[in-house]
Structures are given as structure tokens and as C-alpha cells.
Image (cartoon, rainbow over all chains, first blue to last red; front, side, top):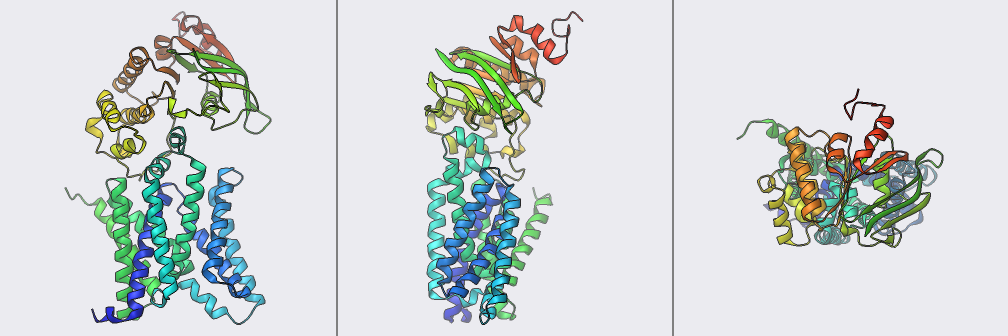
Length: 267
Length: 232
């Protein structure tokens, strides 16, 4: 409890919970639409954008959000027009982001250490601005899901059926990948570029495994995600471990546990 | 009234190989049109063109008398797709799916009773049998109270009881509820027995007309001479 008296712990916990809920919610839809790898692709693309921001001395969040949203829409465009398979488009974007960052690191000196800090993130170093951004992302995610829940559900079930039912598939898909991009940028601060997609995929998959309805898969995903982040922060602080790795490690344990529980005859 | 009218329809996925060539036919209100043809004959592609998932290279499609480009009343069409590529871990329950497309609670409750799916509402869709899944898909298709229902191979993989149940529902919808039905199936016997019109498709229209005269043409397309009419 003494830990909670620290400002940075309070900020980290609050931002962590907001990010955990946002990533878990979009994660369920991404997995069920076989688009789970999108998170990894976007976070690595974002890394390229963070490098650009350092190079041109621009606002990191603003630049990265714009860049990542554009990239997410490009992936969706390539997938929708069937020019390139979705996973291939993501793989290209993934590599391009990292390549861009490596090139910029090579030609410009002086911000390498700062840039590398984004690879692994640190939830305990969240600034007030970053907390505000996390809150904005949380509000955006909740509002989007509340407004479009039914449409997202039927689109996740079958795009063809949703289209016949009058759902504007193009709008839903472009809006959803844009939201994913915004959430991914927020999660980079919590767990870094490399592990950002873990926060999107692992708690969501655990929730799906445990749930017996769509709604409950969202609820369980959020609970597991929040539990992983909160316990990860405390464990990492107590044992002096990196928070990002600890958070993801705990979420993996929860996944394994749920997988085992599902196989046990509990009735 | 002609619900669907297709005139000289041509379609190709790659711009070279024609999947549909000069296809013309029509469906009148109250018809039960059976669509048959071998694999790759363009049957599912035809449905995708009617639903505007795809755009034809040339030709004309009229839905409820309107050119498809100007047609907006998609809720008057119900669609049961051939194969769903639902993720096997999809956790959605039947009632979640139904209420996600429901316009009116009472209509949905009527559908649940009509299709006898009340006992599976709390089950996950992916854990249902083939017959139960087909009834749920039909319920979703009927949820907007459509005048026209397109069914793409709904009988595939069903046992005889599930098949009979589905066919009885379709016949009731057709005769007692005035629903116009277009159904693709490889179950030629069922279609010949219950449809009032047959469209035999093999990229081109091989036959379009009443089921009695369709047998000879279908035998030719499928290489089944003498089998369907029992003369072999």
C-alpha cells in the first residue's frame, strides 16, 4: 500500500489500467477476425515514426499517431482491394518501420538511447501528458465499441452477412484499424514496441478461451489485462524487474492457466 | 412482378477467363428457383453479383424492378452464405448474433419460435450441429423480414432429418409467407421436387424453365444420362 503513495506509481497504474482495457477490447475483435498480427505490424511501424519524430524534433505522440493511423489505413486498403494478402501487407509494414528506425539511427546521432527506451517502454515513467493520452484512448475505444458494438459483432461473425444487413463494412473496417493504431501507440509507453502486440493479443485470447459468450470474452479479456498490468507493476517494483517484461510474463501465465483450466473436467 | 432480372451478364475475376457468360434469367414474386450446376459453374459468383459484392464486366441486373446500381433496399434480401469462415474460437452465442441484427424484439421472438431455435439460444454458434447452424443462419437472414431469400448450398452436410426440416421451413416460407426463394444446391433431386423453376448453370445458362423438362439438360451438364429419370 505504501507503494501507492508514489506519484509515478499512481500515474503508471492509472495509465496501465486505461491502456489494458483498450488493448484487451480491440484484441478480441482482432483475433476473431484473424488480424492479430496487426498490432505487431503497427507497433513496429510506429517505431519508425518515433525515430522520425526525434530526427525532426517533432512531438512524438502527435507524429506517431498520425503516421500509424495512415499506415493502418494503408494495410486495410491493400487488404480490401485484395492487392496484397493482409498478413503480407503487415509483414512489409513491420519490416519497413524497423528499417526506417535503423537507418535514422545510423545517419543521426545523439538520440539512440531515448529511441531505444521506446523498444521496451516503461509504464513507471508515464508523464502527465501520456496519462491524458491514455485516458483519451480509453474514452475513444469505449465510445466506438458502445456505438458500433452490434455492427462489429456481426461483421466479426461474417462480413458477407453484415454487408447484406446494411452494415457499411468499409467504414467499420477503416475506423477499426484507425482505432487499433491509436491504441497501439498508447500501449508502446506501457510495454514498448516489441511487446505492444502482446498486450493486444494475449489477454484477449485468454478471455476468449474462458468465455462462453462474446460479451463475456470482452469482460474476461479486460479483467485479465488489468490484472496483468497491475500485478506486473507491483511485482516489477518489488523485485526490481523490467515492468514491460513482467506485465507480459504474467499475462502469458494467465493464458497458460486458462488453457489448462479449459481442458480440466470442472463440471 | 419480377423480383430479379438478369440480362446478358458477364463476369470474370481476372479479366480473361469468363466465370459467367451472357447469363440471362428472371425470378418472379413467389418463385422457388433451384440453381444447379457443377463446381466452378459460377453459381456462388452469381449470388455475389446479385448482392453487389462483385461488379459485372457487362450486363444488367434488376432487383425489384430497379437497376442494381440504384437499388438501396438491401434489407428486403436475406442471404444464407455457402460456407462461413468463422474462427472456431468465436465465442458468440446464438442470441447475441440474433439480437445484433434484430430490428424488432417481437419479430425476433417470433422467428425463434418459428424456426424452433429457442433451446439453442444460449449455445455458442460454433458448437452447434450443421443443421442447427443452418437454422440460425436462416433466422439471421429472415431477421429483416426479406421478400427474397438467397441460399447458397444450405443442405450441404445435413443429415436426412435436418435436410427435411430445412426444406419444410423453406416450402412454408415460400407458399405461406410469399417469400421468393433462390437456392443453390447439389441436391438435384430435392430441387427438382420442390422448385417451380430450375436454372442450370455451367458458366452459361444451360437451362432455365420448369423442373420437369430440366432433367435432360441437367443429365447432360453433369454427365448423368439416364440416372435422374431412372432409365439407365
